[in-house]
Length: 593
Image 1 (cartoon, rainbow, N blue to C red):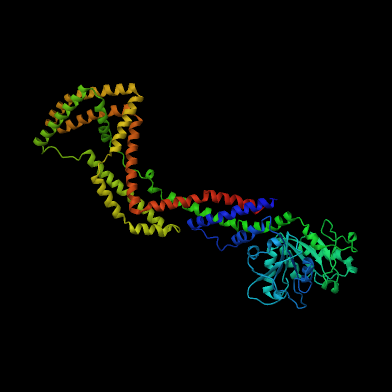
Image 2 (cartoon, rainbow, N blue to C red; image 1 turned 180 degrees about the vertical axis):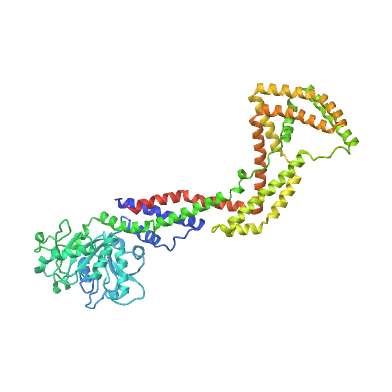
């Protein structure tokens, strides 16, 4: 069993987490704990009752007209509680407190659920009030570690009296069950004490108005009581029927030893010498009784089906739902948008810029001359052979057309997914519907088309990336670089002759020229692919990532999704947050302290 000091520290730690957990509950759309019974029990009762300086609450309970108030006055050593021959005389609980607890605010926290009021008129608890009032006053002779309570009748026909007695039963640490020879087996009283035993309360059994000559009947009576309540008392006392002694606070209390099975051992009872029940109460094992009294209340508050445990599970469950919804929106992530690969001709052209910077001056001079000759032939052919040459779109134009269609298809897929989720998702549905209604797909498609036409295909960042990759490759593979450069320069020097031949052939037969040109270009490109290996793939990946990020930026901006994603990230992280993990750990510890 956890020591009382450690128990209180853990309860305090858990209480300090409740405001944060309430914020998390609101964030993930779980129920609030504000009206939960376990929260009230934890913050208002257990938090106070678990303190080391909180006295042991001892309540005197029993049926109608069995002398509870008389016993209370004897324990207080003062005619504190009003005594009346009327049934159900004490309608409201009264308590005597030690000096350290003579504070209405402190007592209000301890007796939450009652209207705690100072007790000045002895007969006030006998009168009628609208609220559940609890009267208190300082007890001059009350031990410093005890609070003594006199309760309404537990078998009262007045439901309000019974309700107040029930509240006291839940608050008290120890009950003094007052019975008589005539009412020791009363069903209502037995049920009351049985429920107290089930909730972890210890009780002291006191037979009042008992004829000492009938003490031989006590073992059988005790057997019935223990069997009915299903828990033996921690102590057993007798008080005789003596009206004069009761009026002068002179009733003797006789201690009756108990056997291991809870039965009365009258043979060892000393009925010639009385004892002080107040003194005996002050000797109770305070910490042990306090911890045992709190255990059941804690278990109820922490319960996984009705208490804090259930609430934490609901918060985590809701948080994980948002995590799954994040996965369902994966189409909006850059890695899941699959742009078209850049045509290899455009990649090789990009590489050519780097090759030009690494050729010899002779090779660059030849390459420039070849370019001019090629341009000349191209213009001449275009002028003289217009009727024979079908004008074709450039590689760049063809790529832009295909990419635009692919991007439009990606956007349509995303909208289809969002519309589907908006119609089926009970959590995000309304929010997604509002987003989609305010940002029609046509708006995004128009923006994509506009930016796609006006912006260059390849960014400056991409140009620099290719240069950096090629330069790094040359440093890491000097022999490959040497071979690559040698082959490139050989092909460059050979190209003027090929260009002239191709020009002449084109004049005669465009189909032969195109086939030959493709073969020459293929030979050059083959050199690039064979020499550069994985770098070609990395360059393509870089381009695809840029395009995906560009598309994602447009989608996020037009649909205003950044705030939604940020909120969902926070919602999905709640289940694994420090506050939730700590609360779950404390809940498990306190469920069985």
